[in-house]
Length: 127
Image 1: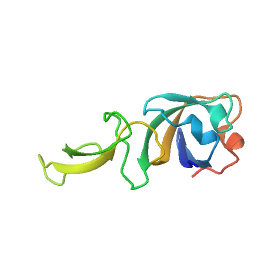
Image 2: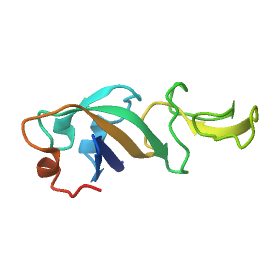
Image 3: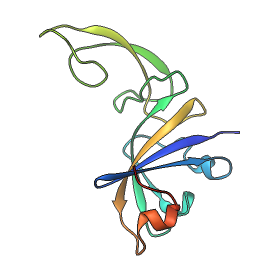
Image 4: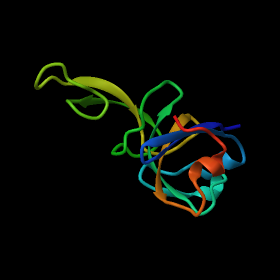
């Protein structure tokens, strides 16, 4: 059974929601940057864009790393590493850009709005 924690960002508000089977099956195999329909999570009329996530070990999904594998990359200042000194680089672990069973959290951004407010559809309070 696959379960994901969704963090949905809508302008200045964010909503958290947990989805399990069969809803979570719609996210398997999707990549960062793809869009998903709001029907998967009960927000009909909305479309969401995947912007990132985290695996079960806490490693971030990296958009430019293909597949769902875990890999150690040598990175400089930027995504996943803030260099304390100019020119410093370090080896960090990342997960690929594809949603798999190892993914725990998925970050979504509202791409297209529906007729009802998102807070009403999700039945959750904003944080």
